[in-house]
Image (cartoon, rainbow, N blue to C red; front, side):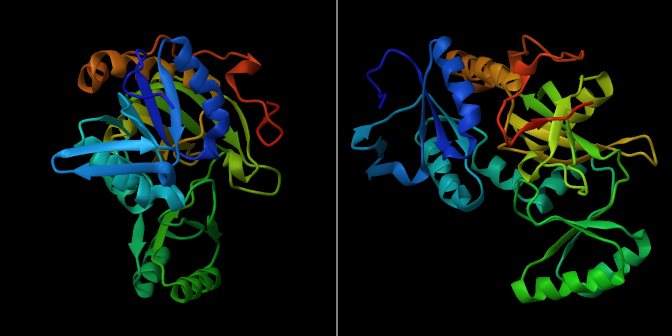
Length: 328
């Protein structure tokens, strides 16, 4: 384990192995740039508080990273958030801190941030009152899309086509004691767009196509991907969404609305599974933060490359059996 006596700066990723594939690209890229990196599972981090001093250890060895990247989600979110808050109080620089992760991983708050940033371009309803949802659906019409307030990877998505399916949903919510989060269906070309942002700058984008017989585009749900060149309209909207959500490392999900010709922001992700083309920019930015400090790096860093032209290079993407390129 790298520690405070090492000459090389240390970046610590607080998270688990859910993004091993990304880390297999990011970690060597950081080491090639002269920065050491380690991943620490929240359950393995030990914190010592002795009067005014707070120290940390992993596996019996003291660890004092120069920078911590918060990459906790789902079951690890609350524990990781608490640790990120304590690490920050100990004077350690944090990227995607506790409050950023909490906000971005809650669709209810995510939509509010986008609304405040002027980039929420469709109505949202969230709550527990069944009649309010019935009235809203009657006003806006079907189909509508139901999302879990918390979750990722396309889990829990439902498309409702009529009042009967809405009543089925309300029954399920009562049984599970959960609130609803519902948005109108956006008529799209069977795909959405993921834009990767680093320090709020869009660096790479890809189309995500729903598999045959499905409308869910998430890669973890079987979707396929293809490069999407960044144009000015796409980049501008993604940057504004990222700034609204506060994600220094993020993924903005957008849809092409066929009925209006507009782009619609679905959500901003704080822990997006990334592609090699984006991870190179992530490595550059993290090194800049280590060398300059967070505020200076955010103010001055610009991506060395923005993928704004089509490039058929297969190495832009991970290549695994479960992550398939779309034949477009």
